[in-house]
Length: 356
Image 1 (tube, rainbow, N blue to C red):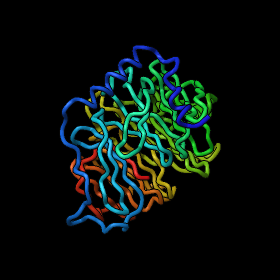
Image 2 (spheres, one colour; image 1 turned 180 degrees about the vertical axis):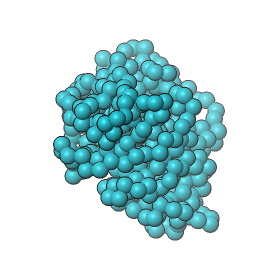
Image 3 (cartoon, rainbow, N blue to C red; image 1 turned 30 degrees about the vertical axis):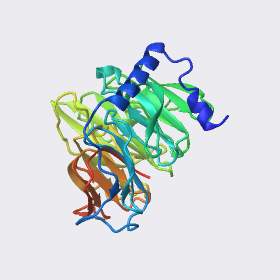
Image 4 (cartoon, rainbow, N blue to C red; image 1 turned 90 degrees about the vertical axis):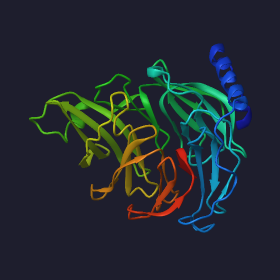
């Protein structure tokens, strides 16, 4: 079965209301007037790199109108923008599809999402589901996992159309193909792999002092290709949360890093909901989910902050991990290996960002 045939069959058996709503959203997105996307053409100006100085392609949604669009860094050419949707976009490192939100989040139920074909221009392929939180892609873009409104994880194989259900939410597809989740209820100090307990509360409590009290919660996590596991945990006690980044190799805790407490209004999420290793494996980004939130970058070897708290509307590592692109909403700043002042500035307003 070809991928196109498999993807086309995704909506079979879907709830009719969801299919109708998605079709209506797609039709409305194609016909409604919205803010103009970034103009097609070649970027020029101070701070812009020469064509080919950076490699790969940036995939983003425009800050004005939330339209999916691409920027070739080899030619500095903006491709045509897709339809106006919502501003959340999740892109695998490889593959022809991404996931995109069709509507803003529907409270605790999540938001309607769809598969997006990354063509010229990008266009909605098929309705996906109601998605809670952020979906996760496999490295090759052939599997995608998300948490459902029923608070369970579904893993979809795009080649076959097969769906696998796993307990827990906040899915992360690891490089070895396993799927990490955490129980859907809050204040649960457990990390699961393919539904089985990987790390339990007594292990995740190790970085905290014996005299410390209060409930422990797993916030976010990621895995490096060599198996190094990064887990952000928070413990509440004495009215003051204490947030640790824990680095595990098998059953051995290799390092802990005390993360800064970065406050946001209630309901804005938590630092550590997004955790992402750089492709080089030497750094780890820790951020809030969503746009207009803060992030930090941790040097994995030293435990020091390579990037101090920074507000961003989307960030992305270059495929080799040398560069870090951070969107301010009005421009994309490309940070070099020292993660200090930007080396390049791209005059593109982006609300979500990926680098392929």
